[in-house]
Amino acid sequence: MTDGDRFPPGTRVRTFPHDPAHHTRLPRYARGKRGVVVEPEGPAELADISAQGRGDAPVEQIYAVRFAARDLWGEGDHHVVLNLWESYLEEDPDRDR
Amino acid sequence: MTGEHPDATIAQRVRRLETLLEEKGLITGERVDEAIDAFLASSSPANGARVVARAWTDEGYKSRLLADGTAAVRELGYMEGSYQRLRVVENTAGTHNVIVCTLCSCYPLRLLGPSPSWYKSEAYRSRVVREPRSVLREFGLELPDTVDITVWDSSAESRYMVLPRRPEGTEGLAEEELAALVTRNALIGTAAL
Image (tube, rainbow over all chains, first blue to last red; front, side, top):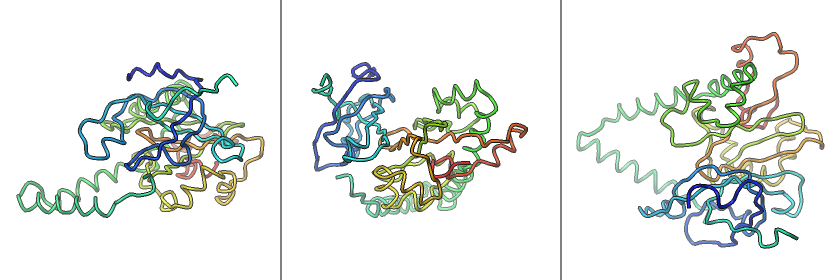
């Protein structure tokens, strides 16, 4: 899916908590964290796969996702925006809380 | 494994490849140097400054720049042929933006020139996402508590550039004069104008 409609702007998402043995563009500080989709950024090859020199990296939508510092670090009043590939994200299961 | 970047291995591989290509007569060292020089010559913070000055003086351009940075800078002849996307983020009275690349040192080189060494330092990369207010204070930028700070971490294919606030008292200045006021750090977000 590369058309950017899986997570429309405003969707509450959660990043996967995975810690792979290979390269990833999901920074450690943002693993297993809740954020809100700003908007799709366009499709690109999944860097986790292409960085291994493999030619079979899937093309996925990238989303700009906004995180509150408090959710990342437990403190702070700023926000951090990251560009995350679709497979790093799931809909926040507690979005209605 | 985001903390490890085997640059040395890659640099070694590139050098070997370059040597091999030279031995086979496919490239010359001079030609490679020329290509690098040409790339760096067209990469300067003066480019970003020109984009900012245009946005300050042309509302229509500013709207296009904020909606699609890549297309808008191409109007002025920048980033042609680049696969990267550019997002320009606007500072306002209530919002301040600052850019970083926590995973390595991604940077909009064509618009800002080669990055300063502090941008690539572990200290800046690890601290600005966590305590931007303190880091900006160390740069001499004291922001009131009422200003929201957003840190843009270049984790994929997009590059960011800050559109600083136009300084007060510059209403009478021409576009080129305005461009001369724009500093590299203002385009990164570690300074205001």
